[in-house]
Length: 380
Image (cartoon, rainbow, N blue to C red):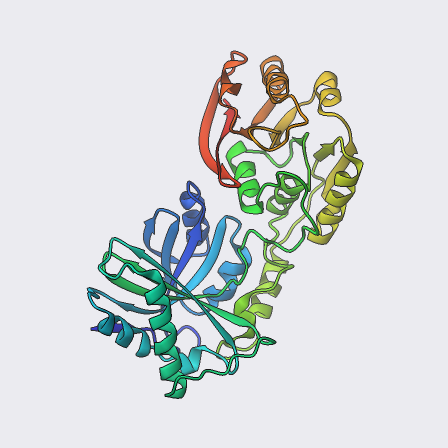
């Protein structure tokens, strides 16, 4: 029996099912932010948090997720699919006419995990054929390249089918404030996680000695101000005419009313003048430039003058930059933590020798930064 999600045009009359994806090791962060919105958790898997709520969650979760990657709306499910005929029928039975606006391009990506139907190209082609036949009853679907693309995800997991719509568009880590990135950028959702893991107290100073595009400082300011991370970007669902009118506008108004400000002390420094100017512009686009003090300064000058508060940094490591002496940078940071009882926080790095350079106790948190396995070392 195929379970098809029926799209209703009235709010709060139906509990929809969602999938919010995450980077590996950030699942607990995503789960907490879903629970913070009051939503019902269904299941947590590697890189995936399933939950259910009404249609308002499309706008609210996209707007507020600091740690997630993509928010999917589950539009169809069926268990025990063992042949392509059943698969075709399950996809065909979904009410695509309500879901796909006229002339939209359709992009389909399939994933198969431990299932009889493992040929993803075939799954993608059959899904497209089923959707076309549902919509037009022939083999021609008019797709305008000038219109939006609707992304459909086919997930076969242990012979169980889930059909999902990407409500976010681009990944949620793309907040919309970075005009450009320099070498070795850190993703915005990873940067936000570092701030939380550091246990930064907002009334204490926060330092980033290798600020680059300013991402860590900007995310810290947004967290402290309770600023919704999706306020300045676009989402795929904005073009869907079957959603309630002004859904996103209502959520943005509500989010704006929850912001607050304080005289935060956030320092972001870099040795590269052009990089620093870009970071300043990024902070302005994000609406947090007043909360961050940018400094053109070598990290050694900061270490030599001594700092207190919290350090949250993404120093050069691994294959990131060849122009720096990675070992000496990490030894300098280790010495800074060891000699300064008034400094907390930590750094993200793949340089595993870091924790042995000084007699400092760290709590390690495994993370991936740009596909590279790293650890965030938080001073205990």
